[in-house]
Length: 139
Ligand SMILES: *[C@@H]1O[C@H](CO)[C@@H](O)[C@H](O)[C@H]1NC(C)=O
Ligand SMILES: *[C@@H]1O[C@H](CO)[C@@H](O)[C@H](O)[C@H]1NC(C)=O
Ligand SMILES: *[C@@H]1O[C@H](CO)[C@@H](O)[C@H](O)[C@H]1NC(C)=O
Ligand SMILES: *[C@@H]1O[C@H](CO)[C@@H](O)[C@H](O)[C@H]1NC(C)=O
Image 1 (spheres, rainbow, N blue to C red):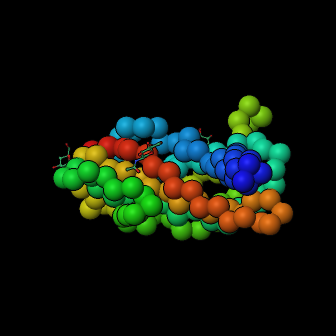
Image 2 (image 1 turned 90 degrees about the vertical axis):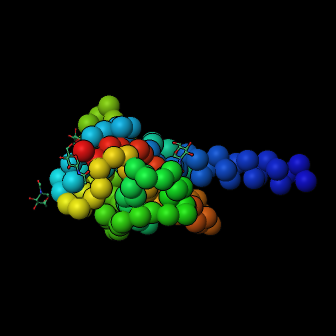
């Protein structure tokens, strides 16, 4: 019992250490419909091994109703493809910039970027699915 709690905690810790973070756009960034936006996804340095699979980036409008969790609704898919974080600047963790285009007809107001990240952790390997979100403003 105790042992399984510990291995569960280790497992969760391993998964957390392999989770990525949204470095760009910042919370509340203003973006025009039809324009390009850089989504910068950072992968923290970590000792445990993980193999990247893919990321999906979606956008949903939340100007008329509350944003849904990206695990439930991703909205319009802006990117669905490879994730290859590499070192660029020595002071930053490995990352990849992904350029996406905001649809020209996208409604003004609050919008949410939803991200799905899939990777394989450890020797198992254990599949890991992570969802992230960032709120921006379409103006
Ligand atoms: C957005 O990026 C695409 C692909 O790089 C480019 O063809 C297009 O001109 C860019 N659009 C704007 C508004 O900068
Ligand atoms: C967005 O992510 C934050 C953590 O960064 C979380 O607290 C929040 O519940 C998420 N929102 C939705 C709608 O999933
Ligand atoms: C990634 O995007 C950020 C923000 O736009 C920029 O500062 C950085 O130079 C870009 N990195 C690369 C390697 O293009
Ligand atoms: C979006 O905002 C711009 C600038 O404020 C405005 O000109 C435009 O009419 C708005 N579009 C919609 C669909 O509300």
